[in-house]
Image (cartoon, rainbow, N blue to C red; front, side):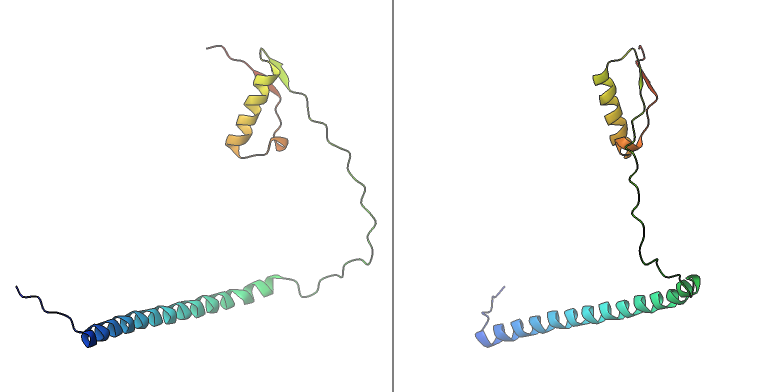
Length: 118
């Protein structure tokens, strides 16, 4: 097998052809993105008239000045009945339940916590 050497003009030609191919593919991708974007915007415009019909044509104006709202009294947490368990264990259990359920602890209401024997 004989290896031929690449001359400088041939190397420049290969590099130019390679860059031209890459630029052509990038141009096609840009054109494809624009076409898809126009299709999506046309679909959204089709949905828009249905939303316009759903909203009332006349909305009442907002009152000029509203009276300041009274602040609500702070809510007192309900008492938790602990049966055969200490406060530290109950606090850990409540934190675990809040974490695993994804509900904030202040939104949960525990009535009683009982230690079960195994």
